Amino acid sequence: MLRLAAAEYRRLGAGRLAHLSKSSLSLSNRRFIHSSRHRNDNFKQQEKQTQYDDYEGVEPQVSRYAMGATMVFIGGLSYYAYSEYRHTFAKYLPWSFGGASADALSEADRQVKKEARRQRRLRAKMVPASSMTPLEQVNWAWTHPGLYVTGSNEYGLIDPLNPGSGVGFKAAVPGLEGKLLRSAAFATTHASAVDSDGHLYQWGTGFAGTGVPHRPVCTLKDSSIRSLAASSDYVALSDSKSRIRVLPANCSGTASKVPIDIPFEPRLGWRENVVSLSAGEDHIAVTTDYGHVYTCSLGDRGNDRGQLAHNGGGDQIKPFVLGRISSNQKFSSAVCGDRHTLFLTSNGEVYGCGANDFGQLAMGNYNESNTTVGKLTPLHKLWKDGRFEAGNAFAERVAAGSATSYIHVRNGDGLVLMACGRGIDGQLGSGALVHMQGSPVVVESLSNKHEFNASTKTLKPLGIRSLSASGDHAVVVCDNQTNVELDKSGASVEKAPVYGYDVFVWGSNRDGQCIPDRRHRFAAPAHPTPLYKTIGVNKGNNDDMDQVPLRLQAAPKQWVCQSSFVDPATERGSGSASHSGPKHLVEQVFVAGPSVTAAYLKKIN
Image (cartoon, rainbow, N blue to C red):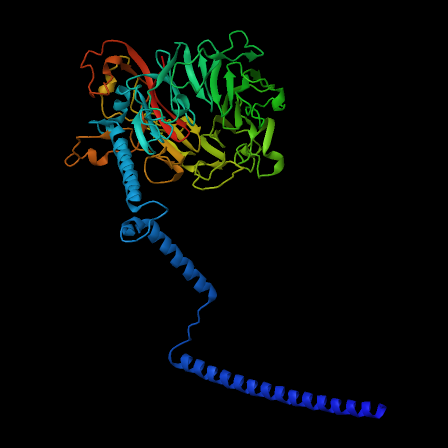
């Protein structure tokens, strides 16, 4: 039995070995044949490559990345053709687009184009027109009181009769034509102005309601009102009695209630008067002639970033109460950004508090420890880096945009304008577009400039008469020389040409708030165009007209007779040549608001 088993095992083992040897031989043969074929193919490929190199250049090889890029390009081109021309070919196709018929889509397109044409006609119609040349724009400003606004009409700030009618407007606010103003203020959705008689007007969709056509409504009559400031929900009033009051912005287009009195804690001293008022989104700052600054919260977010400088949290702040800032410094002014506040002392130092997300408090590079500054803190980077000589420079003026700060510094016999904070829309004015700027940069176009005084034969530093910033842009009126002399007779308004103050704007221009054209932003100061367009002027044979400056100039201070004011409807004056009647001391003022820039003739006396 054992012998039979061993024989069977030897027989099966031998067969297995024979099978494996045949398989190995077959596999080696196949590998040899494959390698031979592979060598032959490589030889043929090299021969073919050599032929291409010798006669036709390198054979092109398509990369998978190139194929992918080509597919993306073809897809983008197809989408563009589909989006632009789908309605043209819709009537030839058996299906509709997006569940709507081609006729319906074509009708919608026609309505959109019709509305665009209407907006263009409306914008062109609303631009103030005059037969006066640009050389006479100062005379035009003296004789055309009113509020002239450039920018966005999305919230009805320019033309409340057509709210939401687009951007790029340049117009006179209806209902305020021919009125001398004392102050005007703009927030995002509402605006306000007070005339020389103390009539307070409010308008905008934040006041009357979204999409409601309306005219500016007189909500208060008080001849003591002197200045206005607008927060997101309120209008703050300062009057000749050193009272601070607020009115709600949303009054549904009707006359508002009695304004709310804001008390001072502690109370103002004997004969202490308010000299300035400024407002952020939800807070206000008031400066007195005693060198004190009072700040106040107007809502739940009024001190969420420490912008009141009271060294405490929001729970310790009483809303609608003006609290005095504890400091040994005497302040000459205080201005508010959206969430930060700047303070200028009488000796030229600058302090700040509040939000520092974009470097608007000049604390240097961004870090978590300086994003919020809850107490009064010097602007560290303003005097460092060896920019100014120690003890030879001091600040003369401060201004604040939404998240940008401006400081005007006198350095010896020169004047330097500096900016820090958010600058992605060019609001720093330095020519660069940066998200954050923690160290002040110089606005070169308005710094270290001089002009020659022919009467004294000396050079005079070119100063700044006014600087207003709001939102993401700024407007400056320079203090350059003019040929205007005060004339109490009121006859100077008829003399031409009269040269005024140069006006510069820079920053965001997406809504035409700087210059109504297609440029999205101005990274450096630029000259805006005049407030009106000339009609009926022949420039062909007049050498003076060939040199007409198309840049805007502000009207200097001058006495103007009321009989010289022109009726905006007829473009005619009273026709009186005797210059009799009341005379007003006026000056043209420019202010910046969110997405708008405004100009008005301010009554000074």
